Image (cartoon, rainbow, N blue to C red; front, side, top):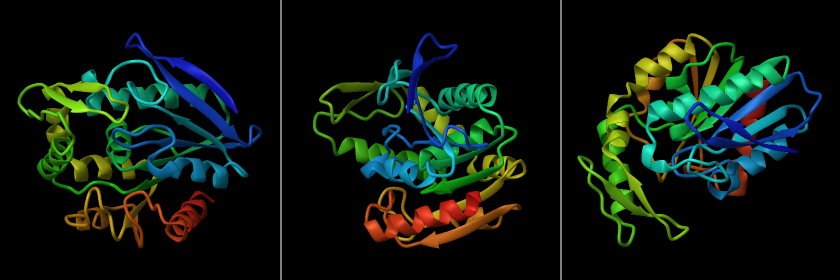
Length: 250
């Protein structure tokens, strides 16, 4: 495994891991969701790397302020994370010949769609949030508010207690970036550039299972519904979603 700190134009570096078959002609980039890291919830991405690494080169990274990356979540917006993803993808294009595909989880699906990169062979979105961004803001705010000592202020500065014990500051630009995002429009634009599979967990406990139908009506998008919670934490559920991803990437 290769580990490196990849510089960005924003005066901080991102932690990147390169794993799997180093001779592969096809690289798969993993894009994690909100507030997690390159392992993803319940080590979803660890299991995915173990399965894909036998055939593909796999690149995963932490967004700024998460995992081993530098930077802070206080400046986080969808637009900033889309630019961070672009930095990673440009580096992958420069370093490794051959095809590139993406597997994104949860909010990482929105970030990938907003980035809308060129020359991505295949893409898988799992646990994508619903099509109404005001509902997404409401869900996140309610989850934050349940954390002890946390203060949520969508119009001002929020302070969220992280699992590390650190009090994290989030500025209103973050909430506004979600509300600015147009899920169906952005996913449709990206689907015109790549072969896109969307996998919805039937028992999604984080983003829910409502208001997802719009994705299946988009051109060039295939949709699967599989049993599982948001991160497919049960072994049988995870095994099924990984099998679907492997089949799509072939």
